[in-house]
Image (cartoon, rainbow, N blue to C red; front, side):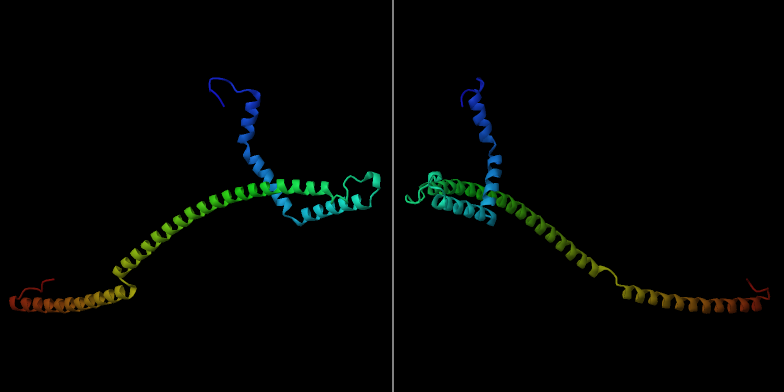
Length: 184
């Protein structure tokens, strides 16, 4: 790479740009890995190999390009080349999937931690509510207290009525003794 004071040459710029765009290569690798793992790919590959073998076995002798006597060397080389490219592409796709799984697991872990904290908070709140509910008066307790107070009020009303009657009798006696008209 060189000094930052010097501009990059065209070739260095291209190489740097290509090396940064690993995501495009990863997406390409995933597409190929997904396709090579399908029954459609196996069918196409089998048809290709079958056509190759049939053509080079039963085709016109002057148009054959791979010899059965040599064990279909070109076909073997083609399949080896396909396998040598498929394996790294599949590994690259698996590495990208592992990275996605790792990120997903981290997000799941954070979500689980938040859920645990929320659950603990709610549990503490419910426990606090239960404690404060024990201190609250129940409906039956309030009703019994009101009944008691109403009975007390009724007793006091009776006492006041009897005292009013006693006062009225005393006023009448005083008026009789003094000879004056009764006090209202």
